[in-house]
Image (tube, rainbow, N blue to C red; front, side, top):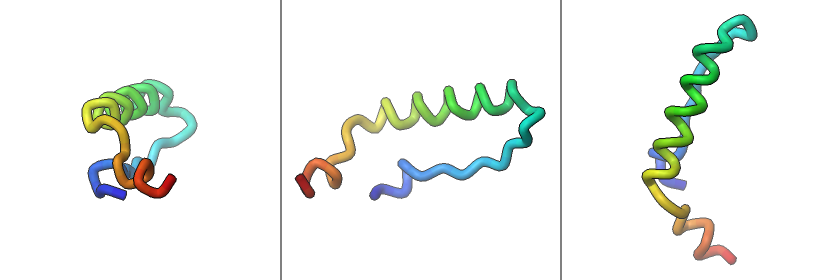
Length: 43
């Protein structure tokens, strides 16, 4: 797995806006990376 595909964020249950923003950023980053070629090679 490429390091760019791993993310860790500490977010409290009361931080809904921060959670939403973090998920959006991670989703955009993963989409920009494209398909995970290493996972496809294992099939």
